[in-house]
Length: 237
Image 1 (cartoon, rainbow, N blue to C red):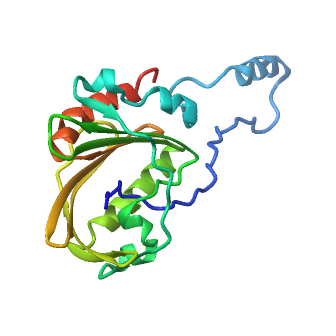
Image 2: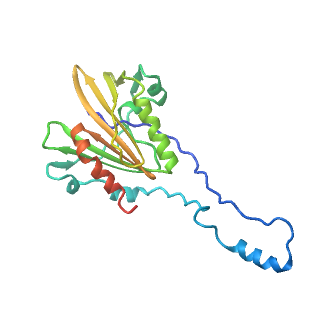
Image 3: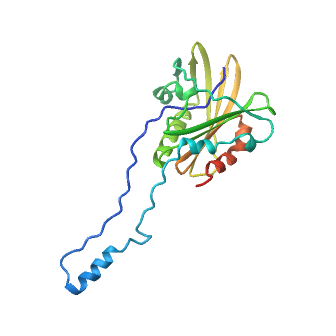
């Protein structure tokens, strides 16, 4: 079976709006100073007091424009048709955090952000080598919280078992050092063992502002293309 990117269904919350503090006078003032006081109150706050407006999430259309393509990756890469299937016959045992999130958290699906874009590629230069990229966008708070939630759950258990249909899969998870790029970073190595055959998949996520870049696949390919994926995702920021 083909093993897809780790994911979970994530809820959304309402963004709390920042309110700038107002100014008010205190008590009556002489007529001569009233105009001066009124004029002063009409002046805008200086830069030290003002808070920058929160950046809005990017649309799915914008995210699609910032995905890696064959030109970015170089010779030997072929884009695969997008897989839109979703499975209901997945169960997880031996990892309470993932059991709570549901089977989709361990084997496939997509992060439930309001805006997203995805692309997957095969690489002719390596046996069964694949790489996929997912871009998501939400408020900075939600992008941070929900990405951390799934990566913390994935690395909370060193081993556990997933059953897809009637096929048992032994899963191993190892937290990896993440490159210090973007605003936040997460990385882990997943090992899928089916019928005695093990397959390794590396997954690294980087949050930059309101955008989350997730690159998954053969460890060497992830390391090679992560920085390029992040730079293209940041285009226009």
